[in-house]
Image 1 (cartoon, one colour):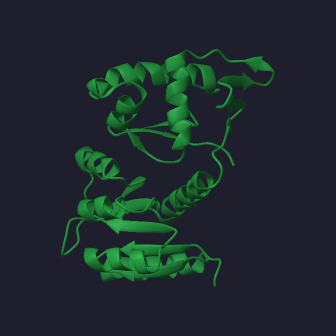
Image 2: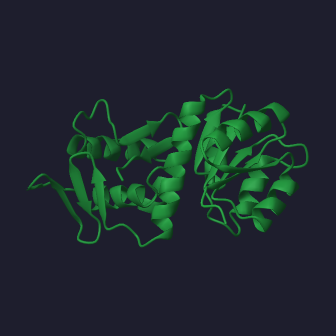
Length: 231
């Protein structure tokens, strides 16, 4: 059995399938392809991949439905590649369970970086949960609710820590405003995006070396946030 990570590409564009198969195979991935949603679902069940690359515009069903059906039984990372570039489509795909979203045409180096992040996060979440998270010069002890920069404790409010812990639990994944608000606060607060922005600004001031140019607590414009951690 090969140890190479297995990627399933579901896309109805033959040139995209050929290009991704060639590029990903050269990068030591095993690649399976499907041109229809039902075919992709069947392949995912028969030969469970380590990651799925999914187009939203398929001939037999919408990619959103494919994503939702996959999430009924698998936590395999899903990266959406689509010509649909509206914030509404991005948010809808992420809310359906996608881990990331890239708009066509895309840069191959960026896609490869997103694949590495998604696979690393998948390995972390399938193993024992991390209790120590590194964010630049900051170490976060999730079990003991302790944040340290070098030997100095960084004081976070209970809500700031809850927000940070939720981002850390899904590190590398794009989380929509609504997902964060409904988990950290309450479903009734799911539309209070400005409320979330205030807390993100506070976290950046406490954790980032340059809060105006964050390296770890990243904004996905119009969509939400992503925490990038080391390791």
